[in-house]
Length: 278
Image 1 (cartoon, helix red, strand yellow):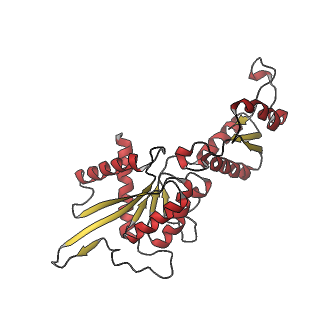
Image 2: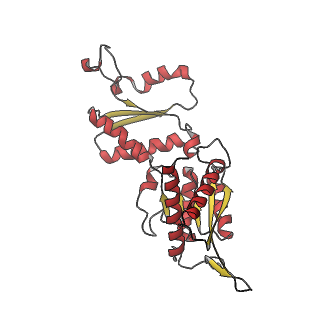
Image 3: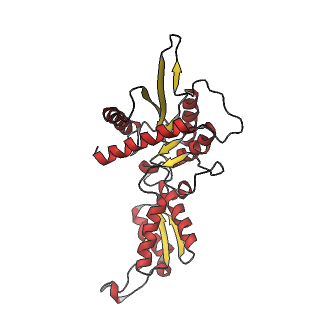
């Protein structure tokens, strides 16, 4: 793990500590009673101990790019680094509670509720988009901040600063979202003055990145972005269940001349695909 990645993890931990310590009100009208919510407690002998508990909600399956197997060692290393740099005070213990969310929205929500019962102060993860959606919607009512490198779809890039916002108390620290990718494609189209695009995709493709329907969610974000522009015509079809031998015929049927053109500046070929395919 490079120093830049480690620095980001350390910065994230600092932010979460601040959020967990400072945040005192949730979006619930009636506050849930929890005796263990305080960071510090005193035992019968008068000894004071302070513990920040963070649930790590990720799949325990190495199929996924972001999994407990890959992330937990990084978090442990980050905690050690924080202590070595004297950023994490000696009197505060950071306890990480890993939970397998199976990259499934239902399991993720159950893991979040179980973690809350164990008196966690914040959530790291989930990373799969449907899981982020389920846990993100309830996190604001649990008064437990959620920090994730996932949440790629358009909805997670919307405002999250007041209780009425759907994903209030959810923070994305990923460097890229589907909105950013869409912006890149549209920028390429603007560069060549293309006004038509046909979106060709496999709905279940790239599951290892954001879970179920990763490519479909990417296309939905792309469509939302295009609709905001208003000056681009688009079509789409998915190739799920198709054999590679069928691709050529499918392109002829679904794309055809409506999304293709000719032009001498593109080379010597008389027929070329002039527009962008995903």
